[in-house]
Image 1 (tube, rainbow, N blue to C red):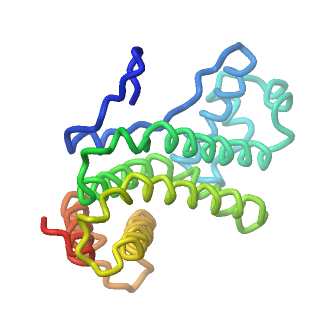
Image 2: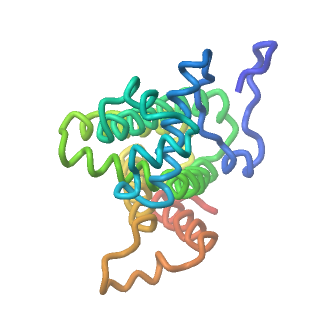
Length: 230
């Protein structure tokens, strides 16, 4: 990150990778705060009760607002869900831009970056499970939402690759860049499966391991395929 003097503060300790925070833009006026409170309330209800538990009455009560205020900002529940999902997409973009500055990660080895990616993804995935459910539902109904999140995922993958490409010499695989892209896709897919849980009847023993064991298994997987001594 940049300090007030403009200097880059580099990531120097592995625990720093695991403690990245979602970046949320500050609200400037009362009107913006009212809308934010409604969105925050919807997120809380999504997390605790799922989409079916999100009602306008519950949202306004939790936000300390009124039906009139709600309809000033949103036409209906679906419009509210669209706004929640879009806000999260914006937050992902801002977090990626500020948190994945290549200079910030210049001294961090590839395996530590990948481990940090797994830890951060697990943490944010659990926190944002309700929003992710809403995003999936809206994506099935609206191709624009699906395309928006596909673009966001591509931007994130590009940013992660940008901080690792200068370190490709650490990789022993004969096609280091392609191998790294494949590992990122495998990690993303496996993390998502862990967050959702295995389908009923599947073995799922790996995904039922403790989070710490899971993280270390993912690190070992990356080290083995990329041929990086760990």
